[in-house]
Amino acid sequence: MYTSAVLRHIPNVLTVGRILVTPLLLLLLSVPSQAGQMSAVCLFVLASLSDYYDGVLARRLGVRSRLGQYLDPLADKVLVLGTFIALALEAPDLVPWWAVAAIALRDVAVTGLRSWAEAHGRTLHTYRVAKAKTMIQVVFLFGVLVLRAATYLSPPFRDGAEWILYDSGLPGLALIGVVGFTLATGALYLVAPVEENVDLE
Image (tube, rainbow, N blue to C red; front, side):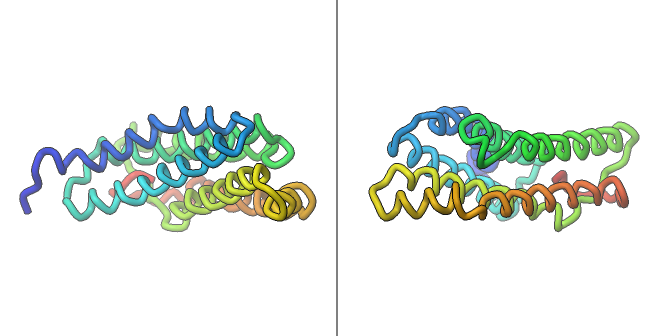
């Protein structure tokens, strides 16, 4: 099927756009106002949706490229890890630095292992369960961002959001689950790095 030159670049444009909007998102997270926090939530949602649609369009248009396979996981890491770092700076009681460090080290270890394998002419198998870790991280971050934005609303929304964030203990439990799942998926590559010619994570 013929695909025009313009359409062929749309998936990569969405991916690059996700990288470019991340600094603005992180800046908005530091603005202590309803407008700033709500805007950050909207940008995060748009950036997350672009992650889904760039892959869908690439498959439907038949334009999956090596560049796209490299940029897509990079954009995910910039968005997700950047948001985790911003929250650790703005709300360390919700996202402590040990959690950010654990997630970052997992990504560094897997990326290093993948680079080593490719340098030796091999490609690591991408586990399906490992692909789900990004989605789980995004869901967690979305929940925290929405609740933080809700603390700038009037009661009862503000009171409910503050109770969930600071008194219920739910964010801490959810974060432990996210970090645990993230590390577990990273361990798969260290324990059983099956070699196949598949797409990058």
